[in-house]
Length: 259
Image (tube, rainbow, N blue to C red):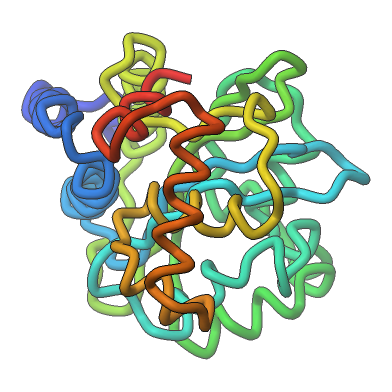
């Protein structure tokens, strides 16, 4: 008898319950995104993972990572690799990212055996393979959907297994496809906060501050990260509020829901 490839009822219920819990956190986008990726990691029993939103996701374009949230408890080297992604690590050098960028499919689920099918592919992505081998990453997958006016935005999650994690199940790809479809539905219905695409024109400095506000950081933390005074950051925050036509942090967060 062949291995089961369809998710069972318990697996389906796990995903749907988790996403219902995620939707209930829409008042706190930072906690919402963290809970989403941590819960997916638990469901698929994968210790390394991340959620992301990337613009200009087309071959030959400069990928712009707009949101990125690593799963809690990930290996430090993997977390750093993800944090540097599209800044110091070209997306084309990563087998999973490259597959997503090249494909025009509206919804994608890529497994390791698909993006690294043979020794030739492993040599092509040698830098990524070095990291994979160093921190003993085993099987993995990336799940995305295309959106935006030109379908050049990718929204999705990646999950990877380290030594000690359970092996992947034949039903995992279909379960992951269900999860990414439902995540897309949460975003379209306004239940999952999503950074807008190209509809806010701010100066580079204000954009730096906005990105950090949307990740849940307070003015004191932002000031320390940008090596500026808290007073200056607060002035920048007020300038952001004025340019976006909002009157506080709650409205700012609401401004970015459902885009």
